[in-house]
Picture 1 (cartoon, rainbow, N blue to C red):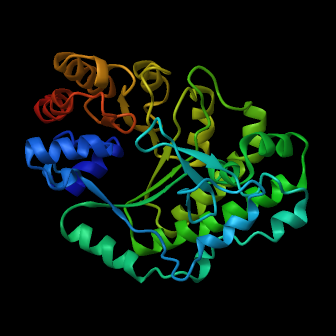
Picture 2 (tube, one colour):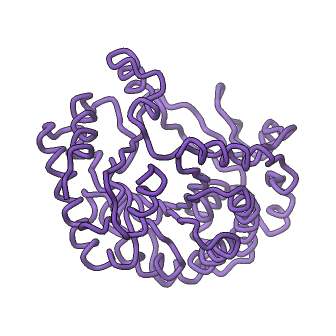
Length: 353
């Protein structure tokens, strides 16, 4: 099998010949692998099976326009993202920020309607097909990355507590904001699908460490129908596209809903929150998985032998047909030993069904 054939067959649960590797490194670990392994681009060095296709470009989109939405000014040195969300730097983290919400002081529907949402409909997207085609010529999987798709984008703008209150009170502000974010997500997803990506990666964190973030009733009222519309649209354009979905935390009650919405691959199945073997036993005939190797436990604190054991046991649980793109569940932080990263790679490459 080629890389593309192997990857697609693995995730479609129709068999595979080898186990691909993938992980995300924090800046400190990127520097370490560059220095100690000579890996200029660690994705190339470790032969990742996929690469990301760039989003729609927004030339002339001025993020400085969003400063006026903060009654309490942003801290010096804060960044503002495409949506106008402020990110104030944290003295305790290399890459995490304190998030500020530009619509948290909005009082009514009119305030939300005045907000200058990013105009992806008039952005530039010619590069997307060029990038997707170039990746396929290299025998790589082309990915459209749209994590933080509906729920997270909406609460980043409004503030989680405010949005929860709006939803529970059936406010028109919740209806407008979630519909607006969905509308923009559909523009972006359509562009990726028409460009020919193999995978589109959606996601919204809907779980916490030990429980779901909201009730199933609230999820099914506000989020599931919108996600379903989004998935239905991209699959109408390309029925073969693989739809990944990311949510950290415990989300087991939501898995049947995600399957019904059309999700093909679920990430990351945190080992600290859910038992992959049990999740695979219950749902592995209807959905595939990406992740499962704990970044709170075995990757930072286990031995190389324990890392390998975790990889092999989860691949065994998935079975000969596949259904598991095994990988660390989140970005690898500075406390993860380089030896454990290499152990994960070796475990994947030496695995025999």
